[in-house]
Length: 208
Ligand SMILES: [Zn+2]
Image (cartoon, rainbow, N blue to C red; front, side, top):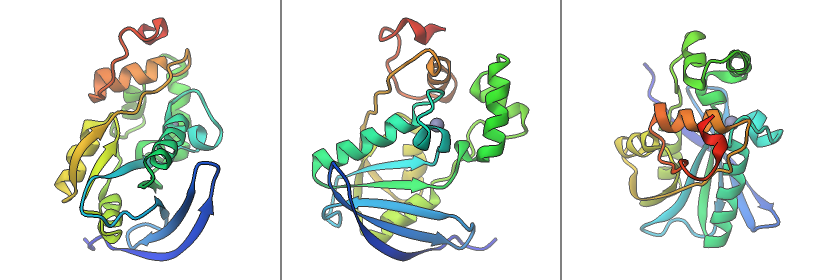
C-alpha cells in the first residue's frame, strides 16, 4: 500500500471574534479530502502546544445538531486556544466517526428506533469508530510541533497519536453540555468507548 503523505497547499489569514488565526489547507495522497489546521500564534516552540484534533461533523459543526456534542467541542476548542494565545485546531475530514454522512444519517434513524450509537454503526457493517489520526500526526510534524497538550475526552485518540510519534504531555478535558437529545450518545461514549467524562451527577438526563 502507498505510504501516506500530506502536502500543504495554501495558508490564509482567518480573523475571528476570538483571535486571528492562520488556516493551512493540506492534501493527502490517499484521499481527495481537504484536511485543515487552524493555527494561532507561534507553535514551533519545543513543547506543550494546545491542540484539538477534531473530526468533521456536518450536523453538529454546521447545523448545531443536539444529537452530539461536536459543534460545542469545536467552538470550545477554538475559544480555549484563543484564551491560551496559541494552539492548533486540526479539522479532519472523516465525517461520522469515519463512516461518512450517508451512513451516519442511516445510523441516526436506527438510533431513533432504539439502537445506541455503537450498535447502529455495527448494524450498518462498520466499526464503532473508524477514525484515523495519521493525517493529524503528519500535520503536527509539518507544523514543527514537538509535544502537545491534547483537548479530548477520548483516550484512544491519545494512544493512537502517541503510536504515530506525537508526544502527548497532558490531556485537557472537554466538558459537554448534556441535553435530552445527546444524553444517550454521551453516556454510550463513556460506557462503551471509554471516554473520560464525569457525567454521573451533572444531569438526570444522562441516565436515560
Ligand atoms: Zn457530531
